[in-house]
Image (cartoon, rainbow, N blue to C red; front, side, top):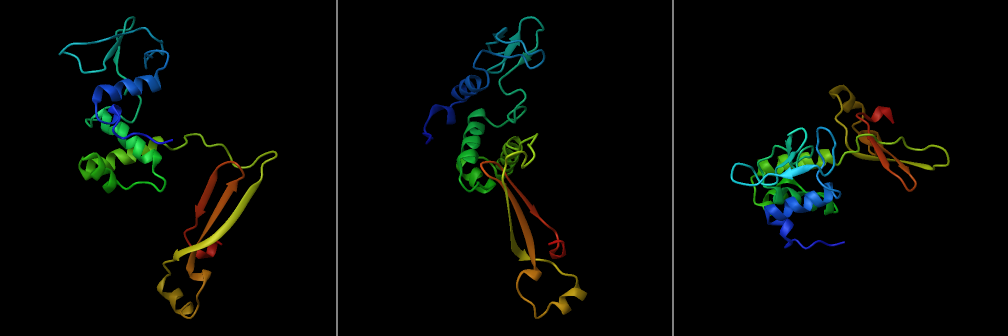
Length: 189
């Protein structure tokens, strides 16, 4: 799946808002307080910010950004949509510097956006690995030099290999998720 980065949702605030409303609320606006569906009025005019809705019964005002990483942000919504697309579709990840250059925002803003988006991608309730009929595969490798205390460095001076490298253990569930554990010292291997 490839996206056209010239699409209006990446450059126009109203188009980005309409896109998010279609994604988050396919059956109509949902009140974040009481959960009532499609019982809201769109507030228009100079006194109201764009995209503001009001539930008729409880008179609560809300928008599509309530309860998302975009809430209470001064960054334009179309830049958030583009940042989410870039971070989610990047094969090897993306640095805040790259995001700052592509979105034409400050580095501090790009760093903030990247951290919020990555935090939103975390699985809040991960399922345990393995279980009935599941196959787990385990592998270990050694990476990076371990900081040794001065008294230990003397004893390991002529040694090479995994003894002075940090062990990393990975568990993989076939057809499932990956779990890694980088240990802090080489003794725990």
